[in-house]
Image (cartoon, rainbow, N blue to C red; front, side, top):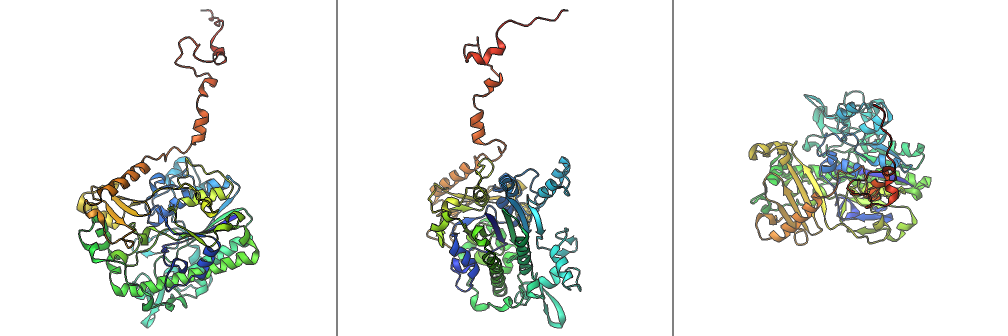
Length: 551
């Protein structure tokens, strides 16, 4: 069986028709959901691109793998999907984005050449690269955000977009306004304009074509991570998607004045930062949300191309499909934009899995409400590939039992983490509260009803009762009325904090098999006269003494 692992960047869990969106029709996402299982309580391990993805790829929490913010390197030697799957005879390929930053210092220390096979895999998050493009070719006064080569920009130039040094910025992510001026997607006022590009040449269309190219030539078994940059900002989309949705399709923001009262300092920092202030403006939401919906509609149409290819070639019968995201997007809800905190708009993601095997027939077209963490994907893939999940390394759990209609004993709570020390908000709060980088960390504990956010640095916790307050407006952590609930959730956090996460070179099974074996290798301390152990163990230590050499 092959695995098609498709990730959309910044796709909210509720912006799909199968998840109940009132206006946005996504028939191809729905098509996969009708063939498989849609998990309704899937949460990422960190609501920031790079850290979240590293948890998907390693099957480990951010505090275990250490890459807790964008461009924090994933340390050399951290095992990834590619390492686990290749041991089982499955290739592991990248098509698109990882947001992974290589541990170049670690590679240099170990003498790993990026041009070697092992060096290239270390530098590319364990993947073999069919094509990598992280999709942020932004340019500022200090240079490019990403200094690496852009295959997408090279493609555009080959298609005739040669009037610009950076057609990603000037065509794919910009429109045109009066007097033939660039209408950059970085400015929200331009979000309703069509991107200045032919739709078949846009990022989503291009990556879809590369995915089909890969499948045409691939020999299995393989896992292909197809990773789209969209619907991530810049919020601008080519025609005809730019005007498919309008003001009538923009929902009222899910926010409440009570959130502005005695606000938690970290929450307040994100409400008052630049993107939070922008999305508090109605004109921004009226421009951005229709474009965001258009980007998702485009993603859905191109997902249809992939599904049609699988159907036409007969590969649908032996290809597992996973659809998910690295985090969501506030879009003005809770007075914020972007991602970062742990409200469902940010930390909850779509997760749809189609398993073509007969065992999964009983669950096709169903939903599952189990508490799922994004790091469960790695364990699922290992088991799907025929392996035994190395539980001393992978911190997630295989989802195959749920796909097969079983009801396994499952987790009572889930955890997400967010290290905001390198962010603008982190700098502001550090100055205001004398915080060190280690203090700029957040932890979410969610048990399916109660959601708590713990903040290091001496701050109080935030607490929400999602059963009675599903919109997460009322922060019950402002008073002591729910101290018992908070204490219980802190108990979960402490339990999680005591997990065994760094002993990755020996499994429990190996340790159990080691017990009592030292004596067979002649290590026999703590004896008085040798009668304490079976006679065969001391046969090399009894009998006639050897002669001394002559002086």
